[in-house]
Image 1 (cartoon, helix red, strand yellow):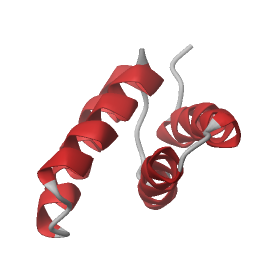
Image 2 (image 1 turned 180 degrees about the vertical axis):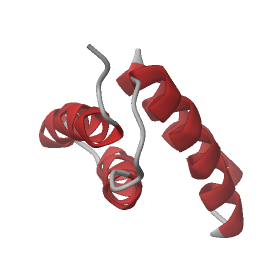
Image 3 (image 1 turned 30 degrees about the vertical axis):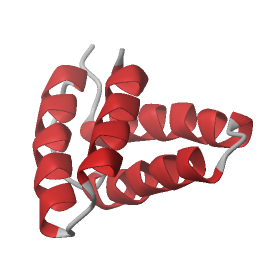
Length: 87
C-alpha cells in the first residue's frame, strides 16, 4: 500500500520532533524547526509514495534555501539533516 504525501510528511515531522527534543544546541533546533515549517506547508500537496514525496520536497527545500538567502553553511547542515531523516 502506497503512503500519501500527507502521511509521509507526518512521518518525517515525527522524526524531526524527536530530534528536536534531543537537540542540545541552538543550531540543531533551528535546522529542525526550518524543516518542520517547510514540511507543514508541503504536506497539503496531493500525491502518493514516500520516494516521490522525498524527491519533490528536496527540490522545494533547495529552492527555498536559495531564495531565502540561507547561508551556505546552514544550507549544508539542513540538507544533511534532511538526508539523515529520510534514511
